[in-house]
Image (cartoon, rainbow, N blue to C red):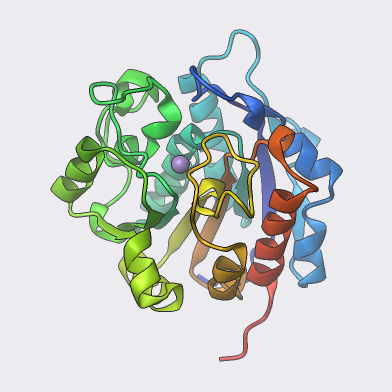
Amino acid sequence: MDFSRHPLCALGVASALGIVHGATGTAAAPARMMEADLLAALRRGGLLVRWRDAVAGGPLLTPSAAATLPDLLEDLARATERTLAAGERPLVLGGDHSIAAGTWRGVARWCRRQGTEAGLIWVDAHLDAHTPATTPSGNCHGMPLAALLGEGGGAWAGHAGAVLDPRRVCVVGAHSFEAAESALLARHGVRVFALEEVRRRGLAEVWAEALAIAGTPFGVSLDLDVLDSALAPAVSTPAGPGLAPAELVAVWRGLLRRPDLLGLEIVEYHPGRDRDGATLAAVEALLDAASRQVSE
Ligand SMILES: [Mn+2]
């Protein structure tokens, strides 16, 4: 199956339900992205993209006062599964990173029905591999990767089983995490390309290895806090020094043109913290690069 021929369907998740202590501004991110016509960057690159339509419940998934995080995640899982079943690819725009536990659950369900599995590249300053037993903050946006590997998700995500094959999961850019998280990922054999390794080897070489681990087909989950806080400040949990947007732009060139890219998720944008739109401009540059045709 050549996913590069599938139009993108953008789904905003206007939620900060995964952050109980701390900044909750991520709920405003998808509306800000719509207002800024973020998808124009993809259209300029020649890709077909639309916001999810009203028939499917509108472009934004917004938790109502009564909605719990497990309800929201199941709604999102159904949405990404249906998107793929309809011959489109999900572009999920967060929202805090806890939504990844829904995004990739839906993608994985669709893949299994096709007799395949999804790989995943997790680009993040953090490991997001806490469980309710190890988290110092109690924030679920620090737990989704563990939940996708079948650890601790039953307690907060409403799904206890493993969603992903850890041999096809890797993390790129991490530099701020606790020992319990690296121990959990090591136990599952998940390859972590820490920021220090990226610095030593260069992102191009690391990204090529990450693609090889993720295999075919695969998805990418980008937490914007992997970007250097001085250059892209508008995130829930700024982590200080990180990747320059230009470094990531260079390796993302043609990403959405790959035949094996199932979907893309971009999370943790906190519009109230942006400075002169620098963070949103970085997202636009990434989408522009990802939409470009790359000659082999
Ligand atoms: Mn994250």
